[in-house]
Length: 172
Image (cartoon, rainbow, N blue to C red):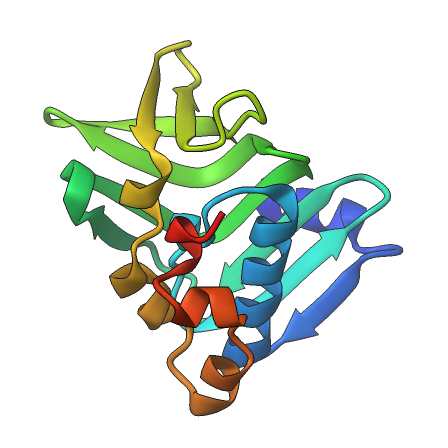
């Protein structure tokens, strides 16, 4: 299903391939949207696409298998499918596919993530069932998570000075 959605938004989209550039572009977009850069810690990304006209974005992992990531500060495990899609707008990702979080012993789909201008230090995650949880932004975007994004030295050199001075999450 996600593949069909991706195909329908390819026309007019900026599409990049290769792990390093895909990570860099996804981080740039998250920063531009005002969302934590540690939000999508996918691995071995084959393709990243963003259709600015429709707001649709996608990330495809090379192995097309799900990965799990634990945000240690909030003790929250999140699963990312081989394809992750969303519609982006300032401060929000909505209609997300491919992202689930573990609550007790159940996996719950995350359909929206938002950070409002009124409370920029908070990030709210919403499920399809209407349940939401809000966390401190710094817990989603820690320097340890960011380091995983910039695994190559060329990307590390592109980091803004504010990130080097204590992490993007702490530089407002």
